[in-house]
Image: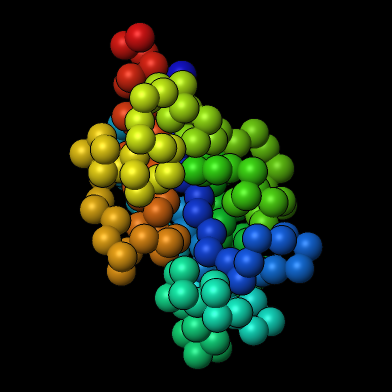
Length: 167
């Protein structure tokens, strides 16, 4: 894999079940040739209450999303942002299950990191970013927010590609 054009996607949700739960925040970070080329994010009105456990994870509450657009309103923008790019996510199976309309191959940095850094303490995004000393510092205020996680995933992708290329 070369340093091509990537669109790193991250979602925050009301829960883990894509059949029952909904997106409350979505972000796309574009990475070109080993650098961050663009960032976009939006809160999303899920149409269902955000459970307290989800609020405790990402800090997004019902009042935050009350005036936000619904996902269907954002899909054309998301499609434009990922057009012509390889889509990437950390634990891509999860994000893809909520953004199933993006029908193209995805790269999973969780799987890449397991190959590139098998001796890492674990392969959670925050752990890898700190362990490798890359990307934005994911403080408790930024962890589990879509744009920060997408940016961290972009830096992780670049690190993994460099590591695997050198191997």
